[in-house]
Image (cartoon, rainbow, N blue to C red; front, side, top):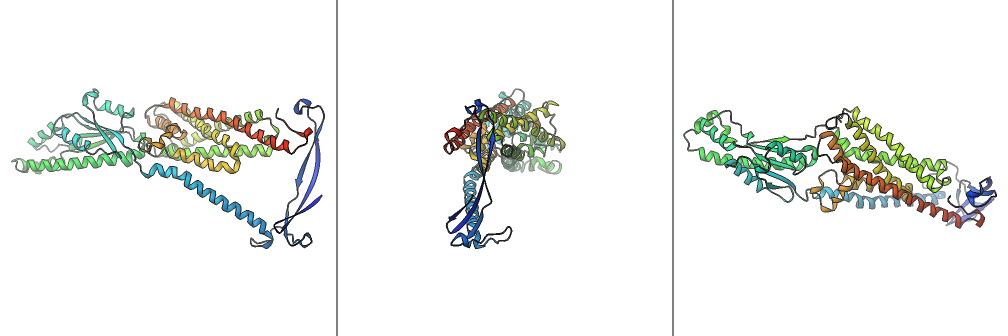
Amino acid sequence: MAESKKLKGVDVDTRSVHSEYSTNQHADDFGSDHTESTRTTSLQPQRLSTGASSSEHEHIAPFSASFTDRNLAVARMIYLRVLIGGTIAITVAMFSIFSIYWGALWKSPAHSLHGWIVDFDGSTIGNVVSQGVSASSSPKGITWEVVPPSAFPGGSSEIAAKLVDEKAWVAVVINSGVTDALNSAVRSADASYNGSTAVTVFGVEARNENAFRLIIRPTVQSVLESVSERFAQQQAQELASSLIVQAILSNAPQIITRPIGYTITNIRPFDIPVATAITFVGLIYLTILSFFIVMMGVSAREMSGLERHLTTGSLIRVRIASTFIAYFFLSLFYSCLSVGFQVDFDRRFGRAGFVIFWMLSYVAMLALGLALEAMVTLLTARGIPFFLLLWIITNVSVCFFPIEIQPRIYHYGYGTPFYNVNRAIRTILFSTKDNLGLNFGVLLAWVVISCITLPLFQWFMRRKHMSEINRSSEPDEKVRDD
C-alpha cells in the first residue's frame, strides 16, 4: 500500500509492506490459551522530492547529490539541527563539567599542609631554624607546628614512621648536637665540617608526588636556604674580628659560607615511572574500558533481540552477570599489562601483591562500570557519553593534588572510586599507609549501590515501554511482563 505525504513543501513517498507472523505461546505467558498473531510494519526507504504535487517529484538517485542540492532541503535541515544542537550541548557540558577540574587546580593550594618542626639540638642552631621555619607558615602552603622532641623517644626513625602513617606531610628535624659540632669546628678550623648534617627534612613523595614536587620540596628548600643565608651572614660578622678567621678561610671556608645546610630524606620515593599510568591516567583508561563493555552490552542486547524478549528479571540478571564476568577477565589483562612493563608488585605484600592489584582493578571496574551500566538505562546510548564525561571529571579532579589543600567542596573526593583506587595502588607499590580495607569497602559500596539502582532503573524503563506498547495495542494484544 503506497502512501504519499507532503511536509513543508517537500513530498515524502513512503511505501509500507505489511506482513504477519504467528507465534505460539503458552497460556500462562499471555494469560490465555490461544495463539496470537502480531503484525509488524516494515518501512521502505523514504524518497525525498520537491515540487508542487506528487506528479512533479524529482527522485534522488543514490550518491548523486551535493550538499546544497535543493532536493535535500529536509535532510540538510535535519543534519544541521542535530549537529548544531549537539555542539551546543557539548559546549554547555564543557563549561559545566570541565569547570569542576579547572576549579580543583585554579586556586590550589586553597588550604595548607601540616608540617612538623622537631628540635633535637636545643641550642643556637635549633632556635634559629625553628624560628625561621615557623615564621614561614602560610595558610596556602605549609602550616608548621613545633613538636617537642620528647614526643619522639625513638628519634628520627620514629618521626619517619609517623610521616608514613600520615600524621603530617613533612618534618624539619634539627639534629642533636649540631651547635656543639659547629662551635668545635670553628675552634679547630675543621676542614671536615659538613653543615648539611645540621637539618634533616623528611617527606613521603609516594603519598602524593605532585604535592611533594610542587609544594613541599620547593617550600622547604626556599625557607631553609633563607635561614642558612641569614645565619651565614651572622656567623661571618661574629668571626670577622676573630684571630682564627684566616685559618678558617684557608682550611674550612664552609664554616663561614654555609654553616647550616640540610638533607632531604624521601622516605617513600615515587620511583616507578610507570606507576603514573596506573595511579592517574590509567584510571581514566579503566573507566573507558568499562564504558566499552557497557556499550557492547547495549548493542548485543539490541542485535540479539534479548532487550525485548527477556522478562525484566531475566534481563537484569543477564546484564549484571555479563558485567561481572567481562570485568573479571578484562581486569586480569589490564593488570598483566603493568607486569609486562616491569612494575614491581612485591614490595609490600610479596607475591600476593599482583593478586591484590588484580582484585583492586576488578572491583574498581565494577564500581565505575556498573554506574555506567545503570545510567545507560535511563540516558540511553545518546545521553550516556555526557554522564561518562561527568563521571571521569568528578573522579579525576580529586586525584592530582591532595584533597586537604583543595576547596572544601572537593571533600566529596574521599568517597570517589578514583581516590580510593589511587590510595590502594600506592600502598601496594610504595608501601604507603595501609588503608586497603577502607579503600575496598568504598569501592564495594559503589558496586552495591549500582546493583540496587540498575534493577530499579530497568524496571522503570520496562514499565514505561510496556505502557507505550499497550496504549497502541488492541485489548487482546496487550503485553505483560512475566
